[in-house]
Each structure stands twice: as C-alpha cells, then as structure tokens.
Length: 233
Length: 350
Image (cartoon, rainbow over all chains, first blue to last red; front, side):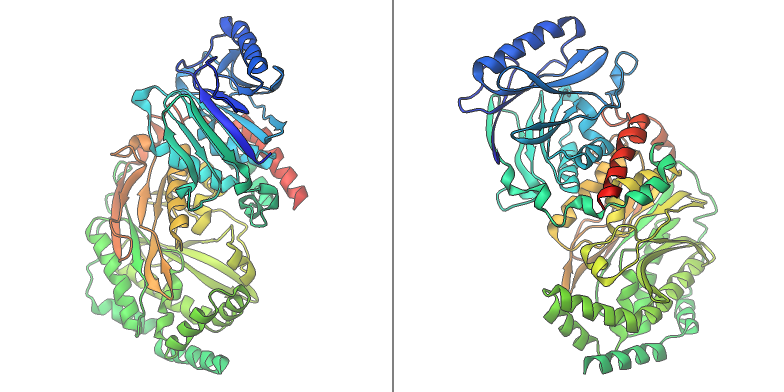
C-alpha cells in the first residue's frame, strides 16, 4: 500500500473519516504502569470500533517505556520498548536492547519510543533491519521544545532512506527521505500543531528496495566491526 | 589533442614549482610566528575553518598568497588549529597553461558520468603528484611560519596504482602529524577507483584530541562514533558540498552528530563557482545545549558565495558536563547487540 491515510489525534478521540492509521498525540508523558491494562483495553476497543490501525501513547509496562501497535481488528501486532531514556526517567525506568520491525500492509515499521528518535544508532539499526517507516511518539514539555531537532530528523530520514512520522504532544512532522518540489527539505508536514491532523502519506515517493543508490549501500560494516569496541563506547 | 595538452600542462607545472619557491614566497610575507599554542586551555581552544572561494590561480605565488591570507587571518584571531576544505589540494591546477581548455572539457562532459570519470582519471594521472607536492609544501611552510596546526583539507594521491583521497594534519613545525584517508566514497569517487581508507585515527594535539573525517565521513554515524569513542573532542570535517540539498543535509547532519555524540565539528568548505557551483558555509557545530543560541551552531560564515573564515572558541570541558536530557542517553548494550548484528547481516548481503 503506497498511500497511508494518517490521523494524529488525542488519545481515544475519534479519528477523521477515511483514516487507516491513528497515532495518539498524548499531552501526558506516559500512561503509568497501574493504568496500562485499562488503557490498552480501551485502545483495543478503539481500533476495533473504528477499524483502524493504532499507535498508542507511551505506556509503562514491566518497568519499560513502550509503544504498541494495534491492527484494525484490535490485535496487538507489534511493540517496542525504549532503548534510550529521557535522562529524567533514568533510575525509574529500564532501557531495552530489543529491536522489533513490525511488518504491516503499510510497509515495515519501527516504533521509536520517546527520545529514541534522537539516537542515530537506533535509527540506523532499524533501517538496516528493514524498517521503511519510523513512527515516533514523543513527550516534550513546551519549555523544552526545540524546532532545531527536526532538521536532525530530516537528515536521519535521508541518511537511512526511511520515512519518519514524528508525533509529539506539541506538533507533528512527516518527513520523506527525498526532497521534491512539494516537500522542501523532505518535510511533507512540518511542525503542524493541529489535532486532529489528517494526512495521506504517499510512500511511493521513495522505495528503499528499488533505490540503486540507497544511502545504506555506502556503509562499510567490516570497517565498523574492526572498531567495534570504540563504536559502543 | 587533449592528452598532449595534459602532458604539456603537467610538465609546465613541474617547471613552475619547487619547494624552495614556495618557502621563498611564504618567507617574503615576513609573517610573525604566533604564540597561539603557547597557552592552550581546554576551556578556550580556538579552531579556524576556512571557506575557500574557488578561483583560478595563474601563478604559484597567487595560490600560496591566497592560502596565506586565510591562515594569517585565522592566526590573528587566535586560532590554534586552522582547517581547510575537501579538494583544497586540487586548486593549484589553475597554474597550468591549458587550464581554460581543461575547464571547457570538464563543462562539456560534466553530465556524462563515463566521460567525466575518464577525464578526471586522466587529470589525476597527470597532475596528482605535482599538485600534492605544491599543496603539502604550501601548508607545511604556512604551519611552520605561523606556529599553528593546519589541517590542510584534502587532495587525491596516487600511491603506485592506487588512488586515495587524503587529508593531512601538520604540526606547528610544519611536520606531518598524521594523515586520514576518505572512508566513504561518493559514486563519482567509486567510479574513479578511489581506494577507501582502512584506519580511523585520532591525533593528540596541544589543543585537544582531533580526528579528521573527510566529506560525508563527517556526517556518517559510524566513523563519528568511532572517532568519539577513541577520544576525539574536535572533528575536522573538510567538506565540499555541491548542491543546495546536500548543503542543508550536511548542516543538519553535523548538528545531529554534534548533539548526539557531544563533540565539536569544524567544517571548512569550498564556495563560489569554477565550472560547477560549490554551495556551503564554513561552520563549527556543537551540542545544542552548549551553543549560545541553542541551535547547534558555534559559529558560521555569513555569506555562502564568497571566501570567508570563522574562528570558534571551544570549551572542551563542556562536552563532558550538562548532557541534554533528550539526547544524552546512549545504550552501549544495544549497539553491541542489535547494531553489530545489523552490520553482520549487511556484510553477508554485500
């Protein structure tokens, strides 16, 4: 499917008609562990009743900050634990070393939990593992919001040959790995703070598998393995 | 006819050049050796990045004197390290008497990658050795005259039948402290048969630990992480972007790397037009939260179509304090497991 009808909306509020994939823009930092069963049950019902795929808010489960993806039947088809944490969560939440690529009718998805979107090594590992679209859900207090960081995401999209859908409590951006006349800098949507926000993402703009000059083709894994001890410092 | 002209040009360059002539031109400037390295302090390292405007140098003196102007200006502003752009070593080619013919030929074939590759190979075959000698002698003499470190951009070097894109770091006595070869080649460099480097080096200087990453190496996660892991605090990234898209991606890429890895990146560039237009602005980048405007830019040349120079004052101690809450958490276990396994899979695919 090359056209994905996305809707970014507040948790559990109805999506715009015609939506395929809903992403919750939550004004809370996360759903606490004690509330996660209720919240996930509501998400299941939401996906079923509107017949949409759903990327949840950030949820604490088993001590990890997580994102879950429901299909349009209300079944959880993918999840991801945060690999890195906002430093204010260190000591209360754990970091994971998992990396899950969710294969869907929209393409191969990677769910970037909160600040994982800012870690280039996580996006690189996801792209090398087959991710085509990165769905990112973040919480940023408004006093900490920095537009500058979006440019970094545009670089990551181009550098890894992936689309990035970045949703925070403050704004939504949709970024393509290539630039066209209609999307300068690769930004299909840039810092749009409207909610609900409806956008039809045409992933046909760029197909990773058919790109002979894929940005990943230039990488030199043997060289990196030689320096593995420094890479992980 | 062109091969004959190339041979004649190459011969003419060799006649016009001798190390002694370069030293004589530099000596004539009566430059005073600076004391910039006498009092290096980790909270105030000064790094210069040149934005070199490409132009035709008709004589050896014009080239040497122009490079001298950049160094003199940087040293006057207190620079301890002065960095020059990618491809800086090719600039003396204008000295050749048939330069206009070469430029016309380059213009003619620039959209045909096969013809362009063939022509560039001919040029490198004829000129790389003499150009390298001019380039290295010039910057060595300047480093010695001014008593500062110079990262002399990059040039293409033929060693036997192997072609490398190489950058040099010269110490305050004009001696080569180390070299760094290009690691990730552009499609054109691949077609030219440039051999990629196999080593990533970090150099101890009086002004901090320095690595050189040429062109897109300086925006590629892996060499950056490796250099940072080896202790580099300042990455010198000689650049020579060609399109506005590449320019904006480079700008974002440097910001992303400086922020995620807590490192300073100084990016000298070429600017102006000579056959092709060179876009870009020389800049120095740092982590967002320690840059004055919180935009990741320590300093940047204002105009992108002319020559220019910035000298940035870098506080190396700040790299180890005050991590950004959003980008400050790296997970080494994830790198050891998931990222290394992804590379292994890629190795099998390649």
